[in-house]
Length: 316
Image 1 (cartoon, one colour):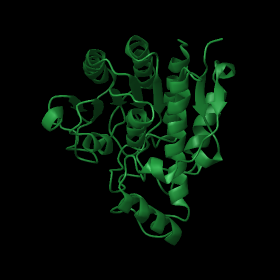
Image 2 (tube, one colour; image 1 turned 135 degrees about the vertical axis):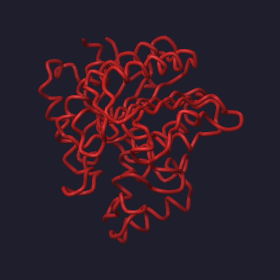
Image 3 (cartoon, rainbow, N blue to C red; image 1 turned 45 degrees about the vertical axis):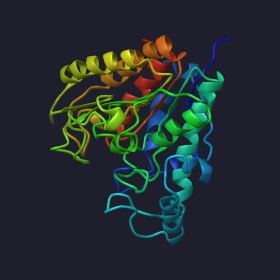
C-alpha cells in the first residue's frame, strides 16, 4: 500500500495567531479544515497531529539570545516582538514552537517513508530571521527545517520554493551565503509591498553568488505573469536537482487578499504543487513538504490550500 499524504491539524497548531482584529487571526486553521473536509477527495486524506519543537531544534536556526527573548516576552504577555506587526501574548513561545515542531514532524514522516508528502497549514513563517521576529512570524519553521534536514537526515541540497505574495526574506537572508540551499521566490515587487526585499539582482553572496532566484512581479499581476515566472522556477529547480523540496504556498497572492495586490487564481497554487511533485519524483525520491504561509482572505485560504493538498494526492 503506498504511503499516505499527511495533513496536519490540531488545536496546538490552530493556536498560532494574534486574535480576531489581526490579519493572522486564530480562525485560519478552522476555515481551511472546513473547506478541505468537503472536498471530493476528502476520504483519501490521512490526518496527523502536531508536535512541539525543542529548544535545541529552535537553535538549529535561531540565536540563543533571540530564543530567550521570545521566552521572556511570552511570559510577560504584552508588547511586540518586532516593530509592531507581531504582538506578544501569554504562551506565544509555545504556540510558535508547535508550528516549528509540526513542520519537523512532517519532514520526519516524509524522510522515513511513513508519508509520501505532507501539508502543514499554519506554518511557512518565512519572515522570521535568525535573530528577530518579523511580519507575523516568530520562529522560522522553514529555516529550522532546512537545518534539520541537513543535520538530522544528512541531506545537503534542499530546495525552498515560495509563492507567497511577500518575499521570504527570513529564509533568503538566513542562507544568503549557502550555495546548497536552493531558493526560488515569486513575490510582489518589494517596491510596493512588505518587506521591500527580493530584487531580481539578489542572487546570493560569496560562494552562493548566482545560486538564488528572486522574481518580483508588479502589483496587479495575474495568472499569465505567474506562469511566465513559474517556468523559470521549474527550470531552476530541475537544474539544481535537490534532495528535498519545501514549498511555501501563501494564499495572499490570490485576488482579493486585503493586504496585497496580486491577482492569482487558486489554479496557480494547485498547478505549482503538482509541478513540484513531478520534480520531487525526478530528483528527491518524491520528498516534498508544503506549508501554508500567508493569506488573509479566508475564502482564498480554503481554495488555494485545498488545491495544494489535491495536487499532493495526485488528483486532477
